[in-house]
Image 1: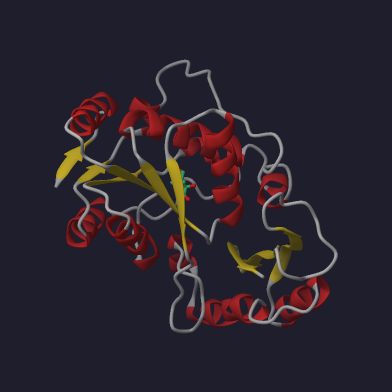
Image 2: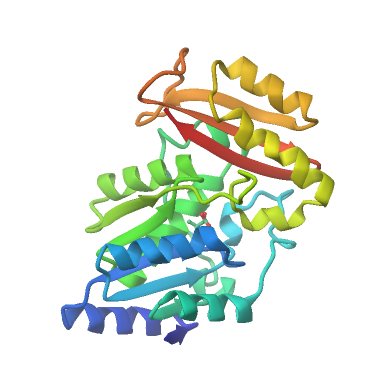
Length: 267
Ligand code: PAF
């Protein structure tokens, strides 16, 4: 397994692999890898990738000033071992300084799907996501890239970016991986105390058979969570929909103590 820190070196290697006819998959991550990320690597394998490039980068540009950029968990050594064991062929560990050069001034802004939900609560978040993902696409030349369904809005925004900016690749969205308890796997779960973990189970439970947005919110509040939003939207356009029915997606963001967790269910 190759390890790259320099964007240019990754770009050169990927260009050569592609010229040699190898099918490249990109798995973008912020590290502190868990089974959810491993399932993305596995999806890349199943889709026939010859090279699986995992990027591990806590992207400062997608965090707001009062968010958890500084304390976001990081463990490079463990991430390397997990990537190797899962069958990645290259890992990219850039630094913020070599991803964002002095006076970096170009950003990618999606102006429709990113307006609501997390986009409304985390101003600038999707600008940061789109910018870094566009850069990763330009560096890795992937035939396809794999994202997790847990970040449902993110996956839709990225698909739109790929369509509208004519990126020549496919986007694969892999299902949410859950702990036995039902809690969606997330690097941020490490912030949770045992009591909070217990409380957080209300999120996946509330999405098992959601009747109305109100009833979902009520369940969360009853468990002691602070609801950031519960919304039912059209699964493709992300426009608000009154009724939870086929073709919609119910999305939840809630604070469990200080930790903001998200989850969703496509109906
Ligand atoms: O989903 C994530 O981990 C991040 O938003 C991503 C796609 C790696 C971009 O930094």
